[in-house]
Length: 234
Image (cartoon, rainbow, N blue to C red):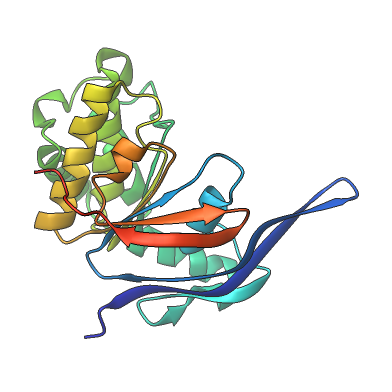
């Protein structure tokens, strides 16, 4: 089996801001292996989140292509992309996007509601996902009854519930204090090492990047440098 899971080849992306053309990404190429934990760093405006959206099939490049698992997702129709994302990608964002009226279990189950699974199987999978992140005892709690760190772990459980091959994390610790952020990042590293999830994370925080196995730097829309973390935390 080819070790490369994600291949980004010469992608370019721009947006129109009035009469101005803003070039966000310019001929970016990068390969990510299966079960890698990769961080992309640089301050806001460097194109990190745009690159993440292209890898996750939330946007399309103006030029170049994105291949995931041997499939060129840049050529997919909207319907194909929707189905591919649902099966292959779990998203974790800085804003947890939990529905306040639903319990933790119900929030986690949301991605499965459009599947053909039975209600009992959906509940079972949601419970398993909550157990993976250590929140099985909070299944009946609503977001207002959870701490920020617990809410973020519910968001991870929701991302895991469909058993995706890729977890995409966009500034996932931006709203957390250092101690809570480190616990969250340790959980991501465990999911990477034990469950072999491929994790692609965007962060501006050097401490967060230390948890990744490889760090890429974006500068003015181009890939500036990359390197492996010398000593990952244990």
